[in-house]
Image (tube, rainbow, N blue to C red; front, side):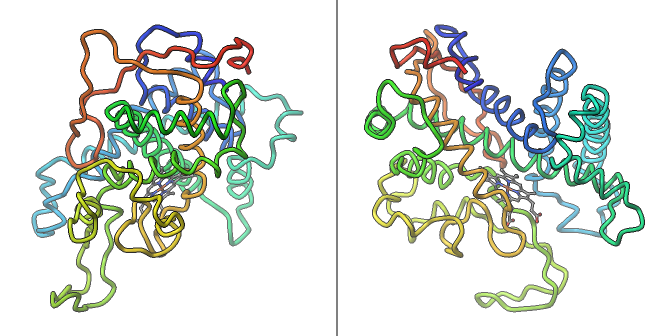
Length: 354
Ligand code: HEM
């Protein structure tokens, strides 16, 4: 609702959809992880920095590294990937230290005890408890925070931006989404969490967006623990293995007319591609023991944000601008940010206030 309120205050002005989603997500994750949104001047600066560093990190993570193919020359770091990562690690370190410090300085003692069970406090308690076998070093605390912040925000905001770009590109799909929202939520009602499972067409739009624009297209690299043969190919022990999910999602032997954005393909058998089963034709969240641990949360945040943007507002392109669906490199980000102008869709002002 805070996001909806912010958009409402900017009705008629172009809004960067990726940026908007990112801010909503970092506030949501911040609330879950360190017990409060980042507020004030310092908080805004920290949020901006998080976005910048997370995006840089996603780009480097997705970049094929020549050192992985020829380990003998890894020392030279020809593409400067290792150097870039070191810089990012340093920036993250400083940022997370400032978040920990910000929290410690801004909350009162009473609040600290009330918030004791948020994720950050739990990690800090494990850090303090040095004698316990489950104790964590400060580096591990920061590493876990970084995993969650990077894993949850960049993926979900990129997908929000793509989904909005695709529905803008396909007015007939936009109409179906709006009709479903009107039927399920009502034209003069606010969206609640319990509406989300009933938005089956919107969920199909999300699945189709993941298929065409998987935010982690090569998944996280694997390493073979032993030599093995797959499909007639020998994979020696210790090989770094990349799974090209994007190409599987675009395989015409699996998907009918794969480059077409058609959510209906997920409506035929709704339970079939539910992310949790191991269906190797469709794995936007990966598979196996390193599969994304944030599937349920990611799906819920994404559908809540998208449903809100499309239920509360109509959207149009700024005058003279055209929809551009080109991608940026291998990380599947949009090359140019999607900017759209919101127009209120519901009648009472009160529906737009927290
Ligand atoms: C729309 C959302 C998301 C997508 C598409 C996505 C996708 C992925 C993918 C493909 C992987 C690698 C899995 C593999 O290689 O098998 C991954 C890992 C991970 N994701 Fe997500 N993710 C999303 C949301 C989230 C959220 C909300 C969180 C946190 C709360 C999260 C936290 C993580 C973490 C910590 C890992 C690393 C797991 C490990 O290395 O064992 N992700 N995600």
